[in-house]
Amino acid sequence: MSALATSSRPQPPTIRRRARRQAPSGPPASVPLPCRVRLEDGRTFSGRLPAPRHRALQLRMLHAESDGLVELTPGTRPPDGKVQLDRRKHACHYLPGGAGKDEREWMAPLLEHAEQIVAGAYARRRFAGQPREEAFVGAAPRSKPEGGKHAVTHTRWLWVDVDKPGELPALWAFLAEHPAQLIVESAGSGGVHAYWRLDRPLPAARVCDTTGEMIEPIERANLRLIHRLGIGPDGAPSVADRQCAERARTLRLAGTINWKTGRYARIVQADLALAPYPLGQLVGDLPDPAAPPPVRYPRSRTAPSNYPDPYKRIAPADYFEILAGIMVPRSGRVRCPSPIHPDQDPSCDVGQDASQGWTCRSCGVGGAIYDLASVLLGGPTGQALRGEEFKRAQAYVRDAFGELA
Image (cartoon, rainbow, N blue to C red; front, side):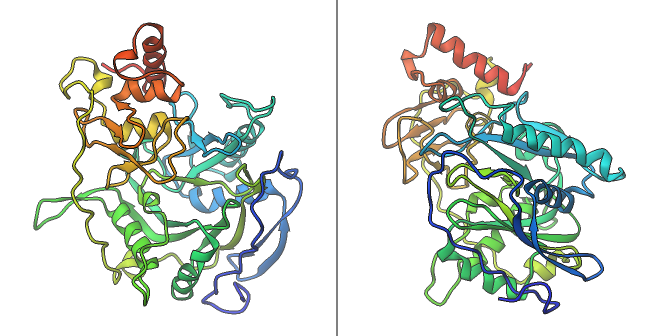
């Protein structure tokens, strides 16, 4: 389909489908990757650019006006495994955005950091002596160097993650009416990430004047996009990833390797001439998804929320995100974090507060924050978590969260 050169309403591009494969290594970073770019003056480039240029273009579009910190995070993907984000404070990196700065001043550190990630400088594990590191960037700036959603105060972008090629027609149909400024092929199962720029910053939270309810506009807007992609004549469920709606979500950086296939993610289309959207024009006429049914959490072996250990007062969703790199959806159901449990269908229930903890209904593993840390380290949980094993888990938690009063 035609894209940027033929119409002021660009049509979504055709994503090149490739068979999934497990490659021992990715292509050299110098191999040019195809993309289409419409410049501010309307001229169109359609050709190949080196991987670092793809990185720079995505970072420039997302964060040239960011007045906070850009989260650029490493993640490790074991062979035949799922990616494990490393969002510990000392290893999850936050660098200044571009607001009020010369591009060379803020862009160079980000590009150098991305290069260090893919080279394995921050890898905690290696496989056959080689790192398998992937790079992820947050679309929203952070107000402080933390990975949780409370570090996000606003965004200039909305986004969706469509995982599979067969689900792309719903996205293309929406893009025909609401073209995106940025589309990135994730180089995994054949899906893409789409980003829409807003004409003004969207705050992270506000209080409803009529009900006094706390509203999270970023998540609400992203969920409207996700819900819209799932509405069809057959009433099919949403095809986009609901967990992607969370405002602190990180998505793959173009021009970096996806070790699921050994290929580089790439910018499919970037439109620098497309005007940003007023929020109402983009999602104002889209309905909110139905609220998920209430979840009954199982009993878990946790301390009460007023326990004197400050780490045991951290909400499970927060410590799942920081320790395991798992974003907990509203339903509270995620894949089991145990590395020895290949949980294809999510079977782990995560509570809302520290007194509820987490439990996998399938394998039975569960507990509180130190139990999760121990599981990630390959250790025991529950009453078996003591002695040196407990000290290892405790050190892991303190390393991730820093010293808490």
